[in-house]
Amino acid sequence: MFKRLPRIDEGTAQSHVTIFVEGKAVLVAAGESVAAAVLASGLSSVRSTPVSGAPRMPYCLMGICFDCLMEIDGVSNCQACMTPVREGMQVKRQTGTRPVSRGDKS
Amino acid sequence: MADVDVAVVGGGVVGMSVACGLLRQGLRVSVFDGDDSALRASRGNFGLVWIQGKGNTLPDYARWSRRSGALWADFAQNLEQETGIDLQLSQRGGFFICLTQAELESRAAMLETLRSDLGAEYPFEVFDHQALARHIPAIGPKVAGATFGPEDGHVNPLHLLRALHATFRQRGGRLVNGVSISSIRSHNGSFKLCSDSGTWEAGKLVLAAGLGNLSLAPQVGLSIPVKPNRGQVLICERIARFLDYPTGHVRQTDEGTVQLGDSKEDVGFDDGTTPEIMASIARRAVTMFPLLAGIKVIRAWGALRIMTQDGYPVYQESRECPGAYLVTCHSGITLAAGHAGPLADWIAGGNPPAGIASFSGDRFHV
Image 1: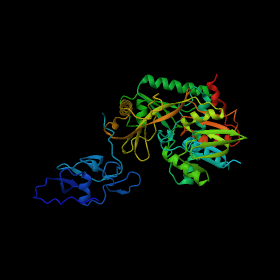
Image 2: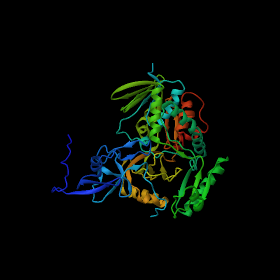
Image 3: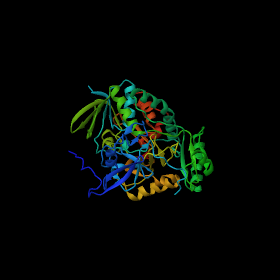
Image 4: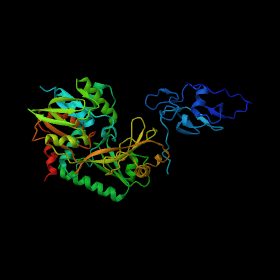
């Protein structure tokens, strides 16, 4: 079954990046998905649903279930499992539906 | 001795609406449904309970649609009470958005003609851009206006289908799943239905199998001049509420999902999707609602409408095999309340619904 990849320790040769989960700096392996990084960061839920408000965590980890929707760099409804981490990325919990601006004229 | 009083072939919204109405009349009913490879319009439709403009060349259809629309609230309430399933019905009116002034004027003229043909009160309003923007602030600058029908609404069509199946089982109806009825014979006042997996007998027969009726209807002396007409639908991510009313092309569900559609293609039995049509649906939706430009589409599908030449339903009892009824239409959601009520009452032996003679298939053989 699944097995956690080796821990990242600063100073090793493995490349890593820092992302911010709810404003808190987290060191993660480069190339890992936001979902994996968030699970490792210990966040208790990634979003609340627009229907019942129930908390959700990443589930399928392969882009199918849409349970891991998060706000990534200011954009809501991003699938955390399909988004690779980038240095300095801001990742936030999403509450309910994605807000849209009525001023968004194309 | 027949197994049941009525066999309904087709477990989509049309067949289940009729079947639930027949159960309410105290009849024993079996529904025969296909498998997942069947062409299932009930799984692919848009969910409008739509009245405005319906029947503009056949006033009886306008009357029938309005009658069903008026029955919808009670129909939904009963289903919700019996099943606990929220149908998300809203009937606060709907807008048909027109991108050009010419389109708006011709649509307003069409509704005006329909109003005078009906010779009765027929509510609609015409809004120019500014008036429309007061009701729907998200409207785009290129929209000319809209017509508003206060009787229009929308519903979650998948919840409706689930609720119909749930209430059918609760009331003792029998569902035979994954079966393809290959032949039907009428003898001694009953009907014998045959498939690879069995045979069944019923006192009456309702053919509500959509495009599946094509091979079945002729076996009981009914002709069915229907053809598939493809609609493609795009489903967008859930976003904060921006649209409080259904429109003919765009609607937002209770949960915030945005649904785009209303393409019409004559492509035979191909229920796929094409990039060209999806792009044109998306382009029109963005012109209507510019805020959709940055919104992700997460799913798309094609589904086949069941269309007669004139677009109107066929409701008919076979002269050759009395007790065999054909029920086919393309607006199975709008008409669901009428099908579960007056139409089922007629099939059960009651009075025919007013104006039903207009929907005989004989109109195609003049």
